[in-house]
Length: 120
Image (cartoon, rainbow, N blue to C red; front, top):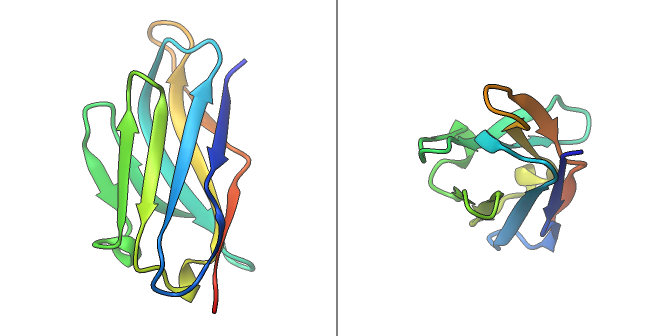
């Protein structure tokens, strides 16, 4: 059984920072891509950032220059450092990862999400 667990959400004032973490556990052979998505109230889930095992990174235009994604392949973790937060960043943030439980397999797993609220 593979699980992804996010942590680090909370309430922050505009202009503030938060660091989200995602930890994968279970019977893991390898993790390819890891990513962060978010879903604001009344909106569809959207991509925030992704990072491959080799370190290739992609960001949504709305977060470029403010958010930084990173990962630790040895620990099966990914982080999202969020700076200069804006009210429009308010959303539930989800971690996902393409995880193989045996060689040559990959299944996309999702965490349950962590709420980030940016408000004064």
